[in-house]
Amino acid sequence: MRIALFVTCLNDAFFPRVGIATVTVLERLGHTVTFPAGQSCCGQLHANTGYPDPARVLERSTEAAFAGHDVVVSPSGSCVAHLRAHTRLPVHELSELLVDVLGVTDVGARFPHRVTYHPTCHGLRMLRLGDRPRRLLGAVRDLELLDLPEPEQCCGFGGTFALKNAAVSGAMLDDKCAHAVATGADYLAAADSSCLAHIGGGLARRPGAPRPVHYAEILAATGPGTPRRHPEGPR
Image (cartoon, rainbow, N blue to C red):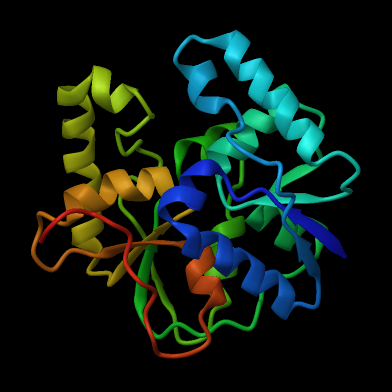
């Protein structure tokens, strides 16, 4: 299958390994992945902060960049949710593509570490990803998947919410980090790099806390090595 990657502006600028991991997984399964060069921001940030007109310009630009592609995949639940609501693109979050379209849960990964999974709000409430990411992680060899207490609780990021409501966001982050530490996991995985960056900032201040990692990076792993950590401030 020929699959077009929408990497998202955040991953492209700050977390390119997430896009590389997504391509690695799909190519390992025998698929061809293309990268339309005309892609940019999907417009989510503008729409969420009350600028619908600039958002529409970016939405139409994204539609044009991916015109003619039968399948579009993105390692970002929030961007997929936005595009699905505002465009006609056949876009799938990575776990949707793997489990629902390709019928795969075992992608040939090996990751000998303890991992807990945080279901981000867009994936949980808008895309309704359900247990798809956990099923993929559960099929990774030598990975011990640990339950996260109160998993449906928001991490407090919410884009500009974290800036406009810093005190509330910080309290929510403290709760999420405490729950992550309580699992005893080596890594905390999620489907959105934005949430991982936020959570990672909190975990960096806690000795022995799990490291944040996009679950695509785990699915791309095939040995004992660990993914490079997200930027998360000094320990």
